[in-house]
Length: 259
Image 1 (cartoon, rainbow, N blue to C red):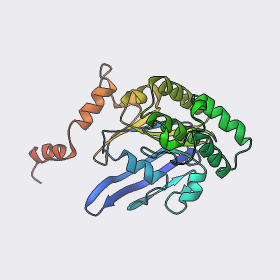
Image 2 (cartoon, rainbow, N blue to C red; image 1 turned 90 degrees about the horizontal axis):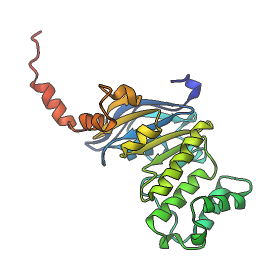
Image 3 (tube, helix red, strand yellow; image 1 turned 135 degrees about the horizontal axis):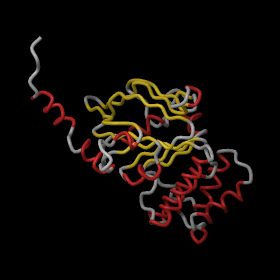
């Protein structure tokens, strides 16, 4: 880990609850400049809640988070202006075309040479034939490409990606993965949420595994393995396979020493 000046994401005792339901138990995390940090867990584990708290889309019930030195809860608009976000299920505006939406995002971010950047990313994602098609008429994969292009277009210092490769074919999964790796190599930082373990082994410097809103383990991939022969899939199943309730039951069944 780097110094505080190098930590682009700092969450302290961050948690979220809805009434009696705990969506995310209190956690602490720091992500340094130049890291590719991944959060992995099964569907409903709390990954999307986590990333929404970090990007100012949700207010925490407890704790606080600073991203790029900005308090995410107090100044979400300033934060969003300085990062890139690909939400899990959000689609581009239905009645804009890919070209119009990219131009809108470029103007919103105050980019120079917007037309050239729009053309570049339409080419990069193979979307020229669909450039003037309303987004409501695009396939799920094509809409995902548009969302990725809007996050990549300004080459942000910090990118938050929630299941970014959903609906992409293998060709563009690889192409995007290579771009993200190059972005990190050039000084960018990425915070990724996914349930695809292959990404962790291929891309992440560090990772956290969560389930039912609770962090089960965090660290370098190699440090999470109990043996050389254990795969990341083995680690995941070992940790997630036991529910929190079962783990608590096992603990309660262990005879306790009398004081």
